[in-house]
Image (cartoon, rainbow, N blue to C red; front, top):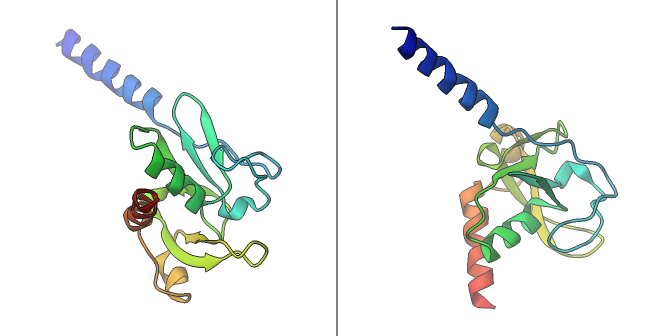
Length: 138
């Protein structure tokens, strides 16, 4: 009985230690993929494995993952309204165009209701599929 309790306790500790949490993003950091400055952390993204890797936008992260399918790190995006990182699978991705560069990208919302006020929102899987299609077309 003691061995079983010890085994359960050990499993719980290992699970708790293996949970992945994002690291706070700061403006002025450099995007891992495009090497441009992260100016607006409300649209930034991050992968977390052994180290945290920051990306300028969710679209930039999707392009990176499309080119590196072996990547298995946890993926986080920033909720535009709160500025907090969340799992990418929890986001509603609204297509947008950067007024400064003309690049197409995404603004991400935690709540689908906020995204519904905009244009139709995509899921993270759909964003990745678009990036993979663009990568294979090149």
